[in-house]
Amino acid sequence: MKRDLYIDFAKGLATISIIFIHTAFWSGQFYMPVEARVFSLVFDVALFYALSGITSGNNIEKTLYRLLKLQITYMIFVTFLFFLDYFFKVFGLSFFSFDWLKDFYSTFGSKYVPRSISSEPQWQVLGNWYLHEYSNCDTFPVVMGSFWYLKVYYILTVLCVLILRFFPKHINWFIGICVALTLIFNLFPQYYPNGQGGYVAFYMTVFLIGNRMKGKKIPTKMIPVLYGLVAVALVWMFWNYGDDMFYKLNKQKFPPKIPYIIWTLFSLVTLFVFYNRLKITKPNFITNVGQNAIFFYFAQGMSSSLVYFLVVPMKDSLPWYLLVLIIYPLNIFLAFLISKGLKKVDDLGWKVLEFLRAKTASKNP
Image (cartoon, rainbow, N blue to C red; front, side, top):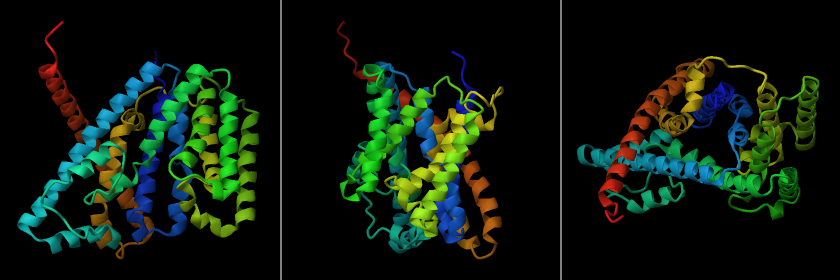
């Protein structure tokens, strides 16, 4: 089956956009104005769920196998991250002091300074990471701050493949149920569930709509209508919630509420408008990012943490727009380099697991 480079291209652009979002909302808090940070949310995480819907099928075995491989890759990464964090702390305590480490971590902000640092490995933290309880990684705080997406992705993918497999004629009904639940949760906030319920209701809608769009093309006549509806929705949002809602959009994201949902419509419409219309004929840097999105996703958390150490000393020396023109490309470059290293770590991890499997496998037929 020929690979659709548009999917890789869109996934690559979405990944680069996520790097910009984490540049803006983490280290960018030191120097970027609120308006610039909020505009970074135009192309956000909803695109990944839509693209997952487009590329997903109803093969349960294949889907669960893919999720299992992703889980093992994730566990290899957090194991590597755990030891990287641990050895850095041991190094700091051995050659410097606890106060030096506190000063180091204060670069990320006062709330990220640990109250105590143990020279003993905290194995319970690694176990919790394996089970997707994303407690902070002190040395790379952005990593765990961006992992909420992964838990929702696992839940959505399992539920949606079951829907696609056993209820292929009722997908529109499930979309309607998810839309209704999203509206109920927002119109009656007292019923908005804790945990993943609100995330799943909205992002399952996006996922299933993406699946319904697979292989289809939005008619040209419908394009201005769709963008018109997006414009009307945005006007209604500011009229109903007030202009200051613009500055609160990031808080409306966790979990997704109506203002943030409306804000994502432009990017989702744009994704579907160009699907089966924009032809990407040759691989390029962006399609490469899309093909290796999971490693860039892991890497950007580390790179977005590292750029703090340039931002803090430079934030008062340059205008914000010049500083972001330095930090953002640097963040992409660091994410690119780190992703290459993480891919090698992943390959090594799989080889170790294969070695252990071979050594422990029963020799009885």
